[in-house]
Amino acid sequence: MNIKDVRKVMRPVNRRLRMMASRGSVTLTDDTKAIQQLQLTVLNGEVIPNVQRVQQFGFSGNPPNGATAVVLCIAGSRSYPLVIALDDPASRATGLPQGASEMYDQAGNYLRFHNDGTWSLHSTGNGTCDSPQVTFNGNLVVGGNLNVGGAAAVSGNQTIGGNLAVTGGISSGGTPLTVP
Image (tube, rainbow, N blue to C red; front, top):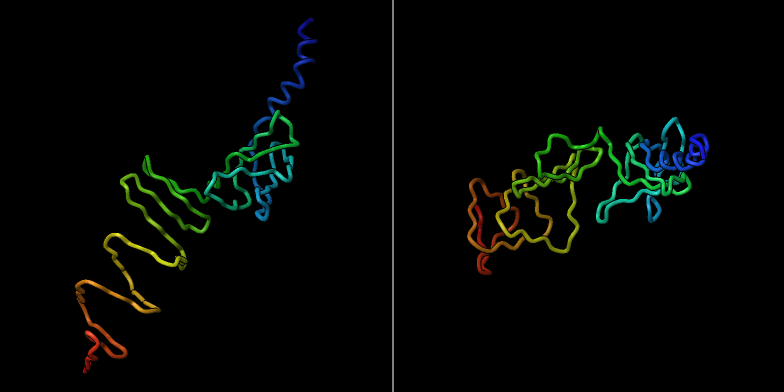
């Protein structure tokens, strides 16, 4: 067998090896299925529809169009591509110190875990905590207004460092107090 014959035999193998991994750009997302489906543009404008995106358990996101994807094609075949990594450089947090991590979205919201054991939650809009009960096992510092829409039971000593405005009555041990 000469070199020309070896090249001829190896041509399909080389092609499959080259097609195993690609870099692509998201052009469409379907997030209604159990496994997210993407449409990607790869290589020289090749469009690959219905690409499954494998996400880490416990984390889910819907990437914006233009996000960069790493596509793995099993056995080099375009008939079963998988996105194994995805990033949107325009949205990605930068400048994190070594050991820190962050969950973020395109709007600038994030949950950041600092490398000193603290964390930060930032929202560009209103936030909601929907839970039957929330327990804080430390001090709670409120830097803005505190509005309580239901009953508030407070135990322990209370210190008020400013004015106290009361609408309605105040009772102490069941005995109503009169507030002038």
